[in-house]
Image 1: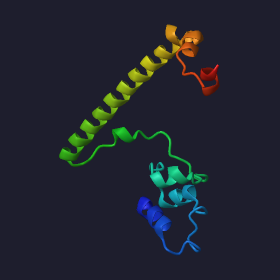
Image 2: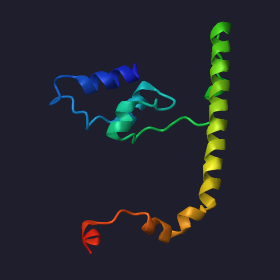
Image 3: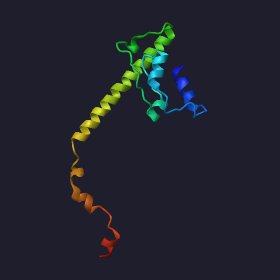
Image 4: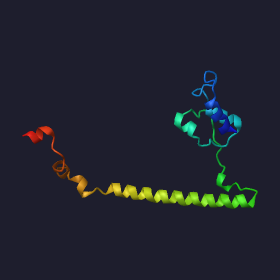
Amino acid sequence: AFVSFVRAYKEHHCSYIFRWKGLEIGKLAMGYGLLYLPSMSEVKQHRLSSEGFIPVEGIKFDDIKFKDKCRERQRQQNLQARKAKRQEEKREKGKKSLKRAVPDASATSDSSKAASRKLTGKQRQT
């Protein structure tokens, strides 16, 4: 309901009455009783203020189970896929930081770069 309300507010034709920049997302989310702010492209792109929102701490959302066994199995599979993706991204970041730490021999020699540049018009005339 929160996401639908925010999107409807943004797309409303009476922009003079419903000012998008004046919408206080944080207070609205607290009014809806949200435990955390959902990631919405509208909020990220326009950098709306989440002031007034206090996220609930101490709740592990991954531990909340579905009552339906079929949906719970699907949720578990999605959680495992997310964890695997995060671990892969961490490994890639680690490899990138190692590559940055070791400088290339070709990158350190500035004279080789200068020799391979094209000549300008004035240089060709002389």
